[in-house]
Image 1 (cartoon, one colour):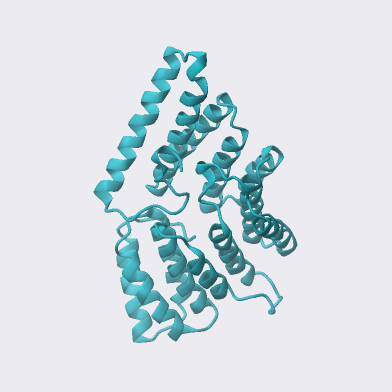
Image 2 (cartoon, one colour; image 1 turned 180 degrees about the vertical axis):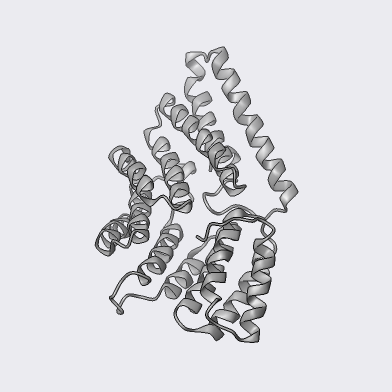
Length: 301
């Protein structure tokens, strides 16, 4: 997907900090060069190719910036990407980039802003894949707000679209599949567990297990987030021994990934493990704190 097909929304490759910074610099330079060429004028025969490529570059640069903690920069790239997608006549490409912006709003604790963006995206989405993506993410936001009915409605709509098949999926949204939707269901289940009085709801840990099983090869970062989330869910569900075992595996994997997003999920694990005082849990907390300190963030996601 995107520039060179190597970008995955929420699912980047494992890489040390130096390579992450280098990748960010390369994307910055790529977007700047594309913008310069556009300012110089684009021949009609090249308009689609230039603007479509620019949209891909801007989407990728925005995601790299987001995962590096440069949130305002990410929003600027995505805004430019939406403009470029519009100039290329790629309406659904613009919708997909809007979902990136809304994802950041969720991450930074502004769910109502995310809903506003997703409402706009829902009116413009035409492809089954982008419609499912918007519905999945909208359900996730409603879950964060504690609205069980609306969460179930939108997540169910995404379930149906995914089950019916997403058809001919463009490369820039190929990351969205049953596993990605399952990932939205995991965090939705986690959030609703904290607000819902319905004890018959499926535990969040089972949703995390489903998402892990569905992930395709190469989605290293998001797999780590799933494993950390599974451990946190088990602690939240009163299973400290299972949570400790899951956390030990997750922390081994997290040590190989440089990502602010992973650090924010580690903060969630730390909060979930806090009520337990065994030596094994204390060891988990100490290691999670050390790993989170490499990418300091106050966000717990």
